[in-house]
Length: 235
Ligand SMILES: NC(=O)c1ccc[n+]([C@@H]2O[C@H](COP(=O)([O-])OP(=O)(O)OC[C@H]3O[C@@H](n4cnc5c(N)ncnc54)[C@H](OP(=O)(O)O)[C@@H]3O)[C@@H](O)[C@H]2O)c1
Image (cartoon, rainbow, N blue to C red; front, top):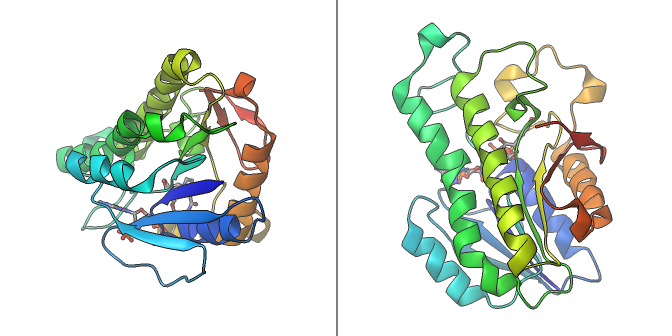
């Protein structure tokens, strides 16, 4: 089997790629990178440059990779480029909002647009993206982080929509939104102060949780939102 991990320079993306490599049932792991070429190495790894903001780059990637069993998008943006999450709506930043939507939502839709035929031959194709619990509308009890929350909620809708459409055209496929738990990466670094040590996962642990969750899913589970321990999150 072959896996595509989008975003191999990220903490969770790199760990996920390595864990795919270590599995006997996986022959090749294609990993995409954009800004930073990742440092991990393994004989099963193949690197491909990918600009997620360029639809042509995504179309070219799927033209190159051939048949694939897993497509996992691990790319996400919370802070950086002078931005931090808006705590109140009075701090809403239009550019941050638009950037968050462009990085956290649109690429998953574009990946789905071009991945379908590459997934068609797989016995149990998986198409998943890393969402976040804060994208759950039902689970939102504290507010804030407007652009990030809205973008992850929109990502969840995108995944649900893809799952409904693919039930007809890719009936063996599992489409999933995954919450990795708070994980020690650059993305969460500024927000770890109030996280108990037991609740802060290493990227390796988060990746193992998600592979464990994915492995248990069947096509009947498609179109759901899963947290790191394999339980279902409400939208
Ligand atoms: N860490 C957590 O606690 C946590 C919790 C819930 C959900 N998540 C989600 O898990 C996913 C992985 O996050 P992480 O913790 O591994 O973060 P990370 O280490 O900061 O990695 C983020 C990844 O996104 C890529 N990326 C960001 N902006 C990009 C852009 N404009 N174009 C292309 N790639 C871009 C980065 O690539 P470059 O480095 O090359 O820019 C990197 O590969 C994200 O979707 C995040 O929202 C994380």
